Length: 435
Image 1: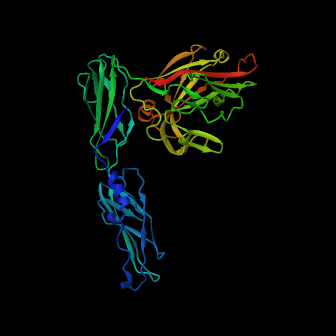
Image 2: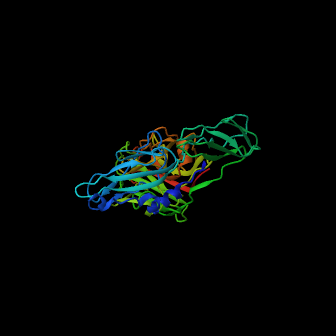
Image 3: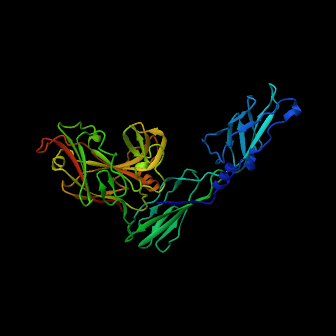
């Protein structure tokens, strides 16, 4: 996974200004008093905060101020090279001190008054929008292209700190020996963006990725040893569904049973979710009696879920019931929901949306079978959340995985069991992990 550092750290300055408004200009003049023959009034000018330099397409900051005399308030910039004001809209132009004055001209028995705010304009911190991590590479002579993309859109240069394992020329990596290749991508920055540097680890040849567990076992019907299973309580959509865990906590079985063949178009009739490490009930958003995906009002908390680094496949042991395995379509999907959150888009249930990647698997046996699902070559974008230009591998390496969802492509509606039930059953055994 790319590790990003920046050479510009303005947060403390902005926070200091927010805490000490008077020292940052919040203590400007409160009026000209009786000298103008009117009553004194005060202008209350909300601190606009230490913002980042505006970039093309960004939205100006709205300024808010009121006068106790009730008259209209106008704004003006005292530092037009750093920031400009049009009406109540503040535009940040470059790094430096931005000073804005809110004024009330007086009238209706009140004297003129003004209030000043001073804050620091900082540079934007560039963010990766596409991960160039190529993952594990065989030791051969085939060159590997590098293509880090930042939202700043500035030129990127590459270098390696492990020349004994790999070399870099321009945007191409050459493999030299077995081992861990470390490549850095640097961007110089400009008036709007701070310089930044990221690094990536690329295993070559006999150097293999370490295993990273999503879950190691099951505590009870509603929870894994690391997180939660599906919605708290029974699946809300199914009156005859069951979750069970083996006595030793090594396996989890989900069974959807129906008296008549289920609607083949409704894959939710045979689906369940497993939440990532560290995600507990307090992280879920309740609506009525139902609990939905982790963090639907805001992204899941930092450090929760699993952050993919150089792992190349999802590993899971899964079994199906014989009736479903023998059906015409016994495929299942695995969907990985990331912590890439779009607050402006709602999902199908009317809740905030997370980006996902999805793979479809054709089972090879009804009995318990180990499946290795390639993260880079088998998964594609599932839920876009209204975002464009998404890349599945980048989503997995830039954002933690907070949920794994299993679903039948087509629930079993072909063969009933001895109890005359149409069942679709998943049985998971052992850990689910990335490697």
